[in-house]
Length: 125
Ligand SMILES: C[S@@+](CC[C@H](N)C(=O)[O-])C[C@H]1O[C@@H](n2cnc3c(N)ncnc32)[C@H](O)[C@@H]1O
Image (tube, rainbow, N blue to C red):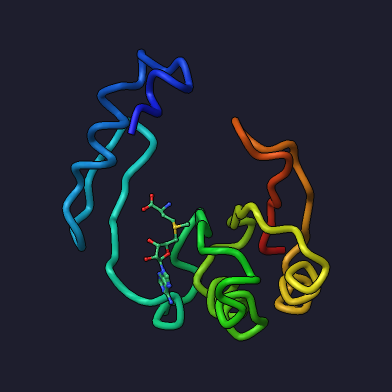
């Protein structure tokens, strides 16, 4: 995919390549302040407490996979995040927001990136 060109991010080409070439289950230092460990597992298998700074929750939407947008899944992600950790996602349906709030997240709707109207930022408070 041609994201580097589409996003006019030629300066970040090497970072983009490093992210996409990262092997599973190993920590990769992508830049001075960003490391990435890709874990190959189901969302329902997320575990750990106060472990992560950021979750990019790019699941297929709640119409396609309603089982991924439940309080049970958000509870796991809430526990796995550090305090003030952030989950971002593109879904912003009422049911999804209710499930996230009941897991404990504080929500803010933000303008989306290229091609998306909105995104949702959920903060562990
Ligand atoms: C919208 S795509 C996101 C792709 C991702 N942003 C990427 O760059 O590879 C949704 C992804 O969720 C994965 N997926 C579907 N069900 C899942 C589950 N129960 N647990 C974890 N991942 C799942 C799919 O295989 C697919 O790769």
